[in-house]
Amino acid sequence: DAGVTQSPTHLIKTRGQHVTLRCSPISGHKSVSWYQQVLGQGPQFIFQYYEKEERGRGNFPDRFSARQFPNYSSELNVNALLLGDSALYLCASSWDTYEQYFGPGTRLTVT
Amino acid sequence: GEDVEQSLFLSVREGDSSVINCTYTDSSSTYLYWYKQEPGAGLQLLTYIFSNMDMKQDQRLTVLLNKKDKHLSLRIADTQTGDSAIYFCAESPHAGFQKLVFGTGTRLLVSP
Image 1 (cartoon, one colour):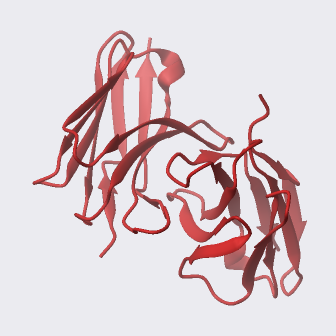
Image 2 (image 1 turned 60 degrees about the vertical axis):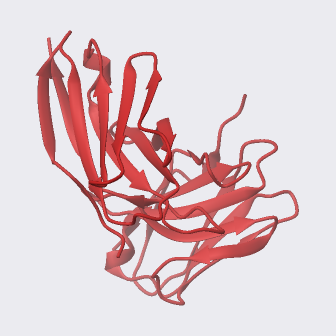
């Protein structure tokens, strides 16, 4: 069975630019969550979507936004990139939001 | 508040048991989780326990929950070199949606 997929794998952007990260959940899963993992730390919650509606938002600035599409895939958008946005961005999918299965992540480097 | 604490490092010999400890702060957490992260990879869900349980066993893994002390532990029996990784404890403090709050992770090193 295909797990959670994320694209791209790696990305290098310049300060001030915009980035879009993509996630495809496990087939049948209706919920997608996004997390940011800075090097040496645990993941921090950014957003959760369930059935295309935002269920929760973490303590991140408005530069971060996301959406979920009718096929349950999701995009995370970050505007006006800062050096501090460099991190591994993880997507997790779940059927009922309890068992969250993570993808391999997108490593974003902002220079 | 939401805070999860773990010790940073644990070193064991192959074949020994490993015990990774975690303390959390939110007594309303309904589920508590253990995830494993290998270098350069995403997080693998190992196991989780519902807050009304004291213990859960799954093959080599045993989870113990002391809800009074807000203490969670993961025991790995017969630890193998392939178990070397970072282990994260996570709580889910919110009703209505399952936001995971992670600790900083415990790096487990298994030597032959």
